[in-house]
Length: 97
Image (cartoon, rainbow, N blue to C red; front, side, top):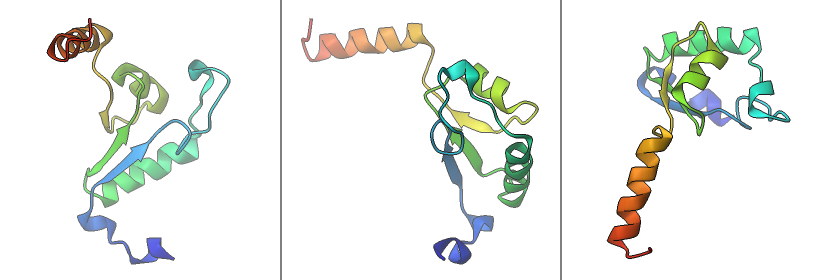
């Protein structure tokens, strides 16, 4: 298997959350994180010396809530107000309205 040939001790791992390491639920608030997964992620973070992060469309607060007490690195979209400002700048730049 390919996984047997990857040395995680000198790699960074970026993990997608919804639909990848977590099952999809009827609503985002209904998603749960099994305790065994939290334990495995804590061990993986230790093995990678902290080079482990979540990538998600969820807010940072939502990721923190889901994976508590773990506090792994995470990449999430900026707050809505910031996104709106960016969108306005893009529209002006490309004259889209």
